[in-house]
Image (tube, rainbow, N blue to C red; front, side, top):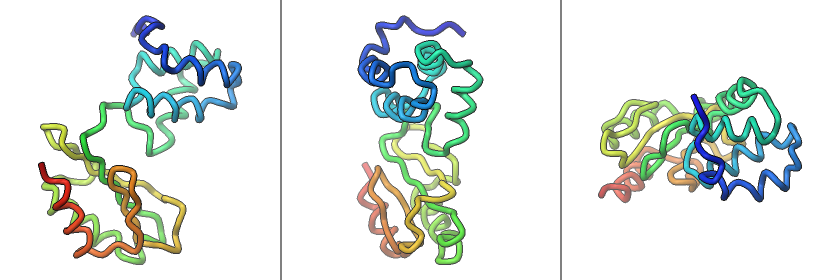
Length: 157
């Protein structure tokens, strides 16, 4: 697949220049690219690989290893449930059921109209606040099914 013209990724240039082509800046560049463009498309990954002088396989491998990188345009609302050990013990399975029921989606799916998506992450890093959910970048700590139902109602169009 051929990369899109470089001009289409001009907004990423300051971050690429700041990284000075260092391979160890890859994750930082990928986060910046996703923030700017919403997701990591194949042409964007090819551009990053070329600018950092890395094999495309390494860039794609790194991006696919981390759960919070997206390869499709994001839904209007993104709901994530933590399924790490502490969250599992503290009630993540019930929260998954609540989210699937409330959103009418299965874990890992996106509504066909692009309104909302539901995914999981293995750890959000604040296990003392388990169980955790993340909706549109806002963390819900020590979440309950009742509280989550109320929060999900706020997402309806």
